[in-house]
Structures are given as C-alpha cells and as structure tokens.
Length: 438
Image (cartoon, rainbow, N blue to C red; front, side, top):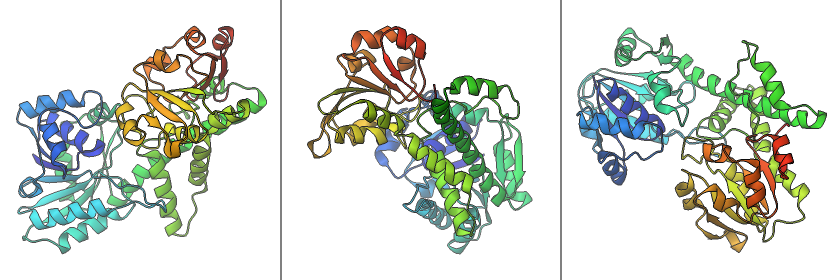
C-alpha cells in the first residue's frame, strides 16, 4: 500500500520505517527541512536501536522516502498516519494543535478515497472530532474516514516493539476502515484487536496509566521498606512469582519519566475531571512520582552541610537506558537543585550528553550558581568527586565495581536512584551507599 506518515518523532518515524520494512511504500513528512535532509542521507534524528539500519535499508530499496512537501505525500496516499506530538499543556490537557494542522493539510490535499489513522496519543473522542474536521475542510469529493491506532512502543526498544508487539489495537467505525487498516498490518506478527475508536483511545491511556500506577506503587512500598527494615528487591522478587502480578515494572527507583507516562497520567486525570469524575488512583501515582524524583537529593541534604564548591558526579542524564530522550528525566529535576545549591557538577551519559548540553551548556549554572561540565566516561566523572548521584542504569554505569568508586572519589559517597549495586559489597569496599528501599 501507499502510506504517508505525518511527523518523524518516535511515533511517526518508527511506524514509517517498520511499515516500509513490511513492504509498504512509505513517505515520511516533516516541516523541518534540515531534519529531512539528514534522514535522506541515512541519519536518524533519534537514538533508537536498529532504526538507522532499517532506515538505510528501506531507503535504498526505494520503499522509504522523506519530504517536507505534504501535498505530494498526501495527494494519492491510500492511508495517512498522523504521528505528531500532543504535548502536555499547563493544566494537564493535551495540546491538539499539531493534530489539527495536519488534519487541515490532509483535507485540502487528498484527491482519492483515504483512511486517516491517528497514532498520536489523544483524549477519548478526539478521532471523532478529527474526522468531522477533515470532512468540513475537504476540497475534493472523496471518501475519508478516521481510525485510531495507538502505539505501545517503549523508547530504546521501539523498533522491536512495533514489529513484534504483544497486540495491535485498531479503532474503527466501519468495515471499510477496519479492512483497510487490517490490510496495513497483514504481514505483522501480533494479533489485531479491533474495537471502536473511543475504546482504542481509552486502551492507550488505561494501559500506560496502569504501568505508571505499578511503578508508583512499588516506589511507595520501597519508601516504606526503608522505614520498617525490609528490602524492596526481596519483596519484588516474591511478588513476581504471582502470575497475576508478573515481574515487569516492579523495580523501585526515582520515578518514571519519558514522553508517555507523565503526560498520559496527567491527561487522563484531566479527562476525568472534565467529566466530573476523579481518578484517585491516577492522582496518587502522579503525586508519588513527583515526590520520588528528588527523594535522593533530599536524603543527601540531610547528610551534607552544604553542596557549595563540592565536586558532584552525575551518572546518567536520560530518563532510561537505550534512548537519548530527556523528557521528564530525573536529572532535569535534580541538577537544577544541585546547581542552585552551588555544586560543581561533572556529568556523564553515553548518549544523552548532546541533548542535555542544549539545556545546560558547560560553565556556570543559572544566575552563576554552581557549574557543570561533561565527562567522556564514568572514570572522569568520578575522579575526585565528593558525592555521586546515579540517575540512569546504562551498562557503562551498571558495570562499575564498588572499589572503582572508592578508588576514584575523594569521598566515596553514592546515591543510587536505580538500585544498581549491592549494598553489602559497597559497604565492604568502604563506600557510603544510599539507594531506594534497601
């Protein structure tokens, strides 16, 4: 089929590349001409395992191209996927302006019957509005319908999650739309679950928010474990044997981040509020996560008399390993606090440094408080440090041995937000070690 994809972020680009991998002819559309040029040359704008390799393979095979010319891309497409951002607004609602802009472009451009598929995460009922909006602005006499097809990829494993997903959710209101969307996924492995548009929209939020609830619950349990003398990792191991619970998302830490969980929990909370209902469980997850992100900084404040002029090593800047995404990363909550307290930060991240430099270039921090520079490796970050914070579980950080902290640091004092190390081994090596729930 001839497919066009609006947006080349995590959702749009990964979907487009995977559709091409399955034999469809795909055109990815974006407004950024420089970004398009880089993709045409085989360079991925995001760090994602196997993505760049598949981009190059399918571009060379003639199945994948990139353009800023939306008119040529949409004019005779069989299916158009919308994968643009729906960023969080100050009140927690989703900003649908990018969805609206693309919808109007589609309405004014398509010249044949077309299925428009919204992959972006949108509030329940949005696809109904998108369909009506497109029909209101149609220029040519064509048949157009809108379907919902939410994505369930995880950053760092997005390609695998798309090609080998647990399920594919399609939300349609007619057999014509359902059959056309099922044809897109004919050669994909996962089972296709066909539901109504509104049910598909809700499945996305309900799934993400359930996982966020699970993470926040374990973080709450971890905090209680510290107070009563239990080990949260032992607790999680015992829970995991229960098939009703499973072993996923039981790791305690300093909260969830990324592009989905923080935004989607707030969006569902806002949606419920609009309908006169309170999702108290989701509200609690949001509250627990906000508190959890800075829990180690608060512990350190209890231990330290000051951070002024202290060398603070920060290991990990992205919200999780396998991605260069900083959205809602704990580093963005803690580093401003450390700089404001006068810390001299030396940070290391194997992938996220470039993005973090855009927010915090090397040199003095805001208002001249503290400073930040970037290390090429963990050893450089730790050398002479008075305190170390671990925010991301990259392999380079996870593989550090207790004696490396003791040998490299001026004062071997470690605050581990990902529970990467053995507390007993750290203590035996002479490292003062603080973690979550142990």
